[in-house]
Amino acid sequence: AKRVGSERRYTELIRGLRDAGHEIHLFAGRWDSDAAAGLTCHRVPMIGPPALAPMTFAFGVLAITRRWRDRLDLVHSHAKSFGDDIVSPGGSAHRMYVKMLEREGTALRAAALPWHPYHRSMMAIERAQFASVRRIVVNSMWSRRTLLAGYPSASDRTEVVYNGVDTEYFSPAIRAELRAHTRARLGLCADETAFLFVGAGDRRKGLLELLEAFAGLGQAKASLIVLGHRDS
Image (cartoon, rainbow, N blue to C red; front, side, top):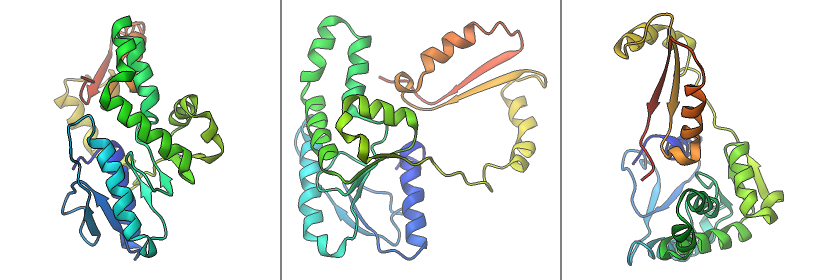
């Protein structure tokens, strides 16, 4: 299991609820055994070709959670699924992601993308999910604006809850301890301004716009460090 981005946020949420003494059931196709310690885990099959696997997973979640519904006070989904009370869609709406890909491609590719079986499955699940859940929770105003551009009727049910910060781990004391060594390892001068971009999915997170802005800075002693991986 990944330990960054949305996956890190979900892991921290589960850990906090578990440590507070709540009973937690995990419904997933696979899981990290260490992260799932103390949870009741239910495997949800993802069968069929890749384009249809999201749909079989969504129906699988619905079928399995219904069998346990008398034990569950709340179903909080972090995936495209059916039968949820709350959903936290990582990266906002898939529909808007497809629209972004349409703008970047050729006219022929833009016309074909919405008809791709995988995208059609994802958007069909998403449309039904957003129409039925009690709350949609995102972690930034950008995510909220993007989601509502595709699903304006969900406005009253969409909330922004910002990520918490572990102030013991992300602290000025640790920064002071690591700063000199890290800058030397990266080849940065003491008086050099460094910009750090961290994130996967450069299309959605503005890396191209950042590169354009950085090119116009005109600062001799400035570096841009990019950590992550490119969109395919």
